[in-house]
Amino acid sequence: MKKLNIVFGLILFAALIVVSCDDKTGMYVEQLHTNNQKSTAIKGCLKISADSALNHLCDNNGFYNYSDGLYRIDFAPLRSSLFDTLSNHGYGYLADTLVVNVNRLASNCKAQLAPHLAQAIDSLIIVDYDALIKGGETAITDYFELNKYRYLKSAFQSPVSVRMSLFNVTPVWNEMLQKYAQYTSAPLNFDIQNYIVETMLGDILDEMRVEEEFIRSDSTHGSSATELLWK
Image 1 (cartoon, rainbow, N blue to C red):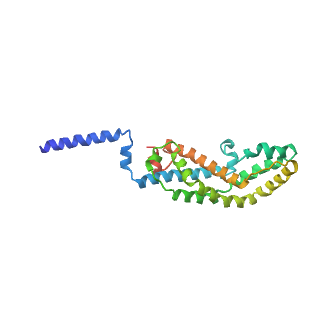
Image 2: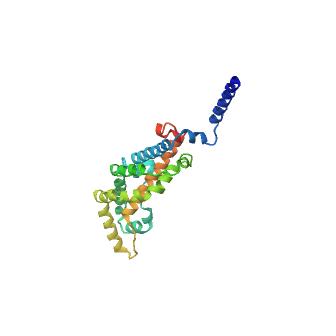
Image 3: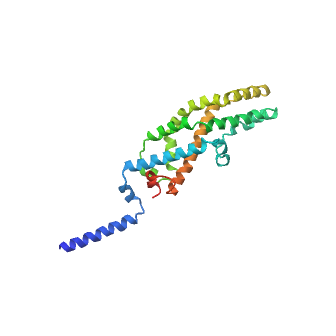
């Protein structure tokens, strides 16, 4: 009887190994890792993604040049109104100057933005760990945006406001508005600071999504903390 129990135990152990190695549901992974480990993986992914996004965009005029200008702040909402009016009357250079200065502003905020992103990540409350780990390719960044966008938008206001003067954005913008008023009575309701903040934040989040996809698909792109996301 004792031998039978030993044999039965060995068979059961082998069966468990086979099941765990062929786990298609993710249940074994869920049981193997604690919520603390999952939180570390999720926040580790966000930290790596945020650092990469800032390194790409807030360096060497990255907003203007990185990825063939994909993240360039170009004031598309004003092209057919303010920009065209100024161009038609010989002041197109002001619009060009504004675009260059704003992108320089955005590319020189790394030191000011990094602490706010770090604070947002550290304070993120995670309700369903597995939904983020096993979700879509950008599930973690999407969740981060949903829960921290308002905080980050508010936090970015002060650094942008200060740099609008440092990078000669405010004076150029005021001159553009003065010239525009000389040639048309059409109202222009546009909050330039809010536009810059929202565009910068949106670009950073979009680049974080790109980085999250890399972390999920390439084990060498993340770290030991994010190993859960590609296993």
